[in-house]
Image (cartoon, rainbow, N blue to C red; front, side):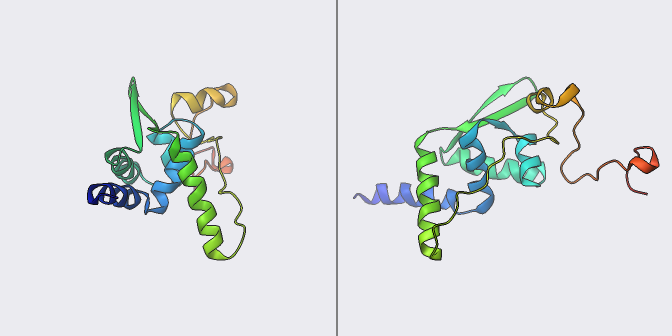
Length: 144
């Protein structure tokens, strides 16, 4: 193997060496997603998620498409799904167990993007990640 091949592989694994980036890839293995969708799923701020997305994009692992005000991300190569699967299996073996598949969620009720809003009954509004749910006893104005 050439030194340049080793360098490229090391860069790829460096991009994968972060739990949030791995979770982003797991989500994108199911379907493309916008930043607000990922923020809601991960419980992280937009700036932080965008930073992780930039790292994955620079590594060539994801691509993006703009749709109006929203940018949707997807895997750049379907082989990433197999790589993630093998990484889960290797981690399970290293931990000494069979390791269940990582939990995945395609339903994001609090995501404000148009695609998620369309999936909610009555196209209901979303609550931003980290925001407290409305307090029904106080007329829906939030915690008192």
